[in-house]
Length: 185
Image (cartoon, rainbow, N blue to C red; front, side, top):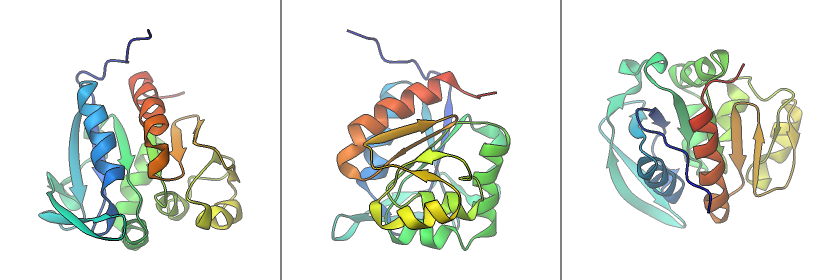
């Protein structure tokens, strides 16, 4: 049996706002912490952030930092949960777009699931990337220059993407492997 990569000492930023798909944060966060990572919740306003649980509002989570106080240089990797509302709100926040862009500028690993790639489109980082997402945004990704494929999980350079909550086991596995490898040249 293969041993899981060790993320001891790695700091992961989880960026989201109201309406994030709860399981797309909680399951990856648990997997990251089980591998030894420290996960910080970053949201535009700080404070409490309400999740979305499949068809209705979910639980409330505390932010570790408001976005204006978060420095991407303090983190080794970025987790972007989906949900329909979450990335649509985040792409309207210039600080959120800038935060995401800095991870790509520094070749740091990023994991995005479901609708989260909407934020990657806004950050102008999908050109030439092979990736997947929730099917409803495939045209948006293609129009932004991505090669969209319908697969459980896709890894292209410093980016790993998945389609929906059903893909979380594969997403977690690839995310942890990518985050363990760190910065890509």
